[in-house]
Image (cartoon, rainbow, N blue to C red):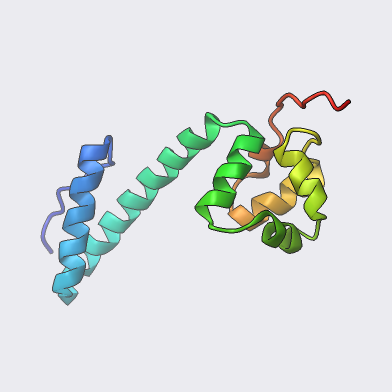
Length: 129
């Protein structure tokens, strides 16, 4: 068995390089490269997870929710149906008029495969007149 020369990805340049190598190996489709393909896949996934966690930590829960709706190419109506909540409740949350409850945070975490605590961080609501 040959030695693998990869390490934990530390920056975008290294990430791009590993993605290019992985793509080339997958296209070649040699059985002998399966361990290398698996390792590169794990390293790339781990980097993506760290990058996402960093991105998430810079957003308040409403910004995060808006970002996830856009990223998943869904609509507020479709998401509210999946979550079994009213479209108006989701609109109110996205306009900072209502806060995300623990129950809704749990549903969102399940839907988007994130820790529910990211949806419970404090943020300011707008004054409703």
